[in-house]
Image (cartoon, rainbow, N blue to C red; front, side, top):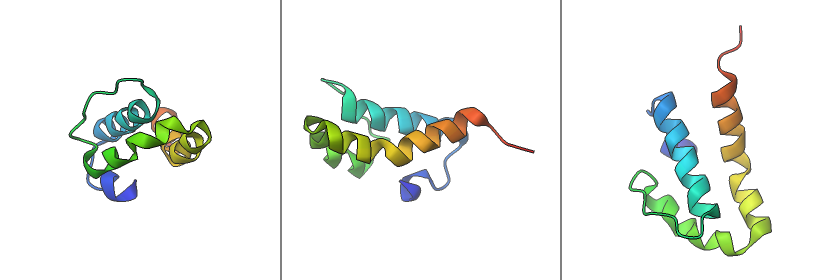
Length: 71
């Protein structure tokens, strides 16, 4: 995840997170070129407990993106 996020804007990072979540949860996820090699994890969607594990860091990212900066 950190390798894919390097150099992205906050909007691009949010889009990547959403795309990854869709990849793991949607019945028919569209191919997303932004995901690149992360698309090999498509088969994880067949194992709900593994989806939770695979999404853990991405969910934290989503929370950080919505929380915004703290002062």
